[in-house]
Length: 465
Image (cartoon, rainbow, N blue to C red; front, side, top):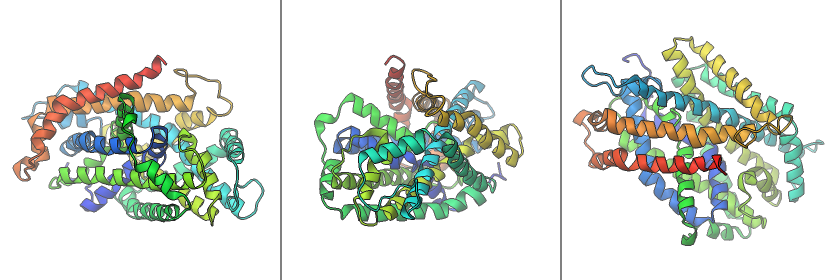
């Protein structure tokens, strides 16, 4: 453990964790869920749930990771060692469900990255006047964006496979340099670039005609919209947005300095994620209302509705490219850390050479996950799993089953296996006492497991839909 690499500073750790959590969850999934759930009511509920549930669970995974100083599977035993006595090896099951979930999310997540690269490429082609491009220099209609999506995304499996491969290759180049030389150093540049792109888009969209109508929709809560269904939807989004339940936080915090204040870093992580998600709404809803577009178009909002809004803007091609660059940067900072979860298990637990582990993980996910997800909208569109196409099945199983089971296992492990060792880890063995530790421990031990079970039961409704 003494030779394990640690983050060079709190800032680099926070930037890396922020990068891990600010992916498509904050920039794509959060805005369309806000649109589907009536705007301000969803935003308000999300902020409250992030504070009361999200941040405590970040601490759960941080405690396991830093105390264990190991990969996300072995951590479920090593973190609970007390006076030489180890917890049952059965706890490792939750490490493996996290790995399965990590594979599942990468299977379709990388493909969405391929879609984003395809949009950037075709917008650039359109701006240059080439045939087949998507020119947003003048207003276009919904029929144009739907035809483009059908032609260039759903019915172009080879092209999307190529764009996805490029995205995987970018991850490969960075991951081969290791946790500190690769992930940490890349995040130092990627996160400022992401924030700059986000700021540019927010400022531009808030100055559009009728932008304030979008802001009103976004921020004005309709309390009649706050229902048990909305609450559970928000809980699921908090898990997705914070990369909880698939070993990312455990893996990243295993490289955290023993003297670091985990409470402070967890709070900062939750706050940054919330701010970026909220800023993404300021980027999207003003542009939709400015172009008189419905905000409730669901997952297709980014790919079918927003290009119409960009086409109504001055310099529409430029701002569209900036927006999609923002998405791909956010996706990259997340995918790097999810890959690292699986790579670290192969490297540390199974003693596979690092470069070989990287090749196996990225190659295996591409062949067994990315290609089937790409084909799900083409030649394999009739293949159904759990009454879903392959793409949606990966999303459902990873997001509604694997992640939730792993988060539940982590919470039970901290509350009932680690017990006071978890409290000691939070308080740095008495050198950094926090008044909130007792409240956090009670939440983790008694309340949060019930909340997670509710999410799980709600998620499984899809089996009987």
